[in-house]
Length: 220
Image (cartoon, rainbow, N blue to C red; front, side, top):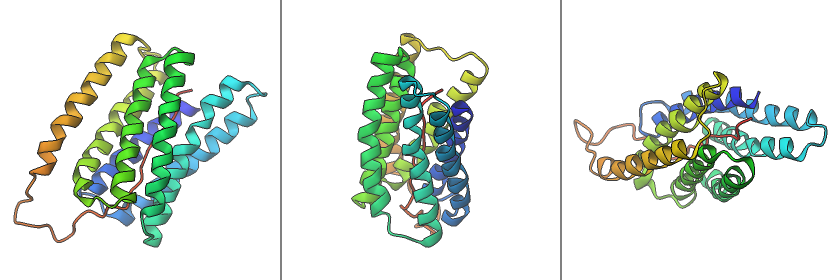
């Protein structure tokens, strides 16, 4: 059940990323944030209630709330045109917590690939904190592309592999995934910094009041 939710986390991260780079209107992205946010709250609640007190199952489900609350927060904020400071500082909490879940996957679960994915999420939510909480709007395009890419790399593709039984929970895959992230996210820095839109400054600049957050979840 949690794996299905992870797949749709990939969708909302992709859409939120496109919103930040100016390809999707903010209010048009809000409903999907509410849909996926609701799913990511209902799912862990069900998993915890049916865990029969199993600490491992409860731990696996607990991380989902971090992202479910992010997407609900973002969706409501976009529709109500709220200031982004609250979701920004909540993202700081998520980023720190994600490091803890990364350690859990490395040390307790024995899935280093998801340990790396949780580091990806920690990095992304740290970007949300800097962009939305500290208002460094110069990071808008960079954060948008990182968000869109992580939607596929950390959520949609892993979920599909898990659903088909092809997930490679190995150290080799974890290292390849980590190397991909380092190379791509560093390469995006000069690309997004020196980007000049054709025809001058766009009339509808992307609003820095996203999540997404998020966008994300513990496998299981």
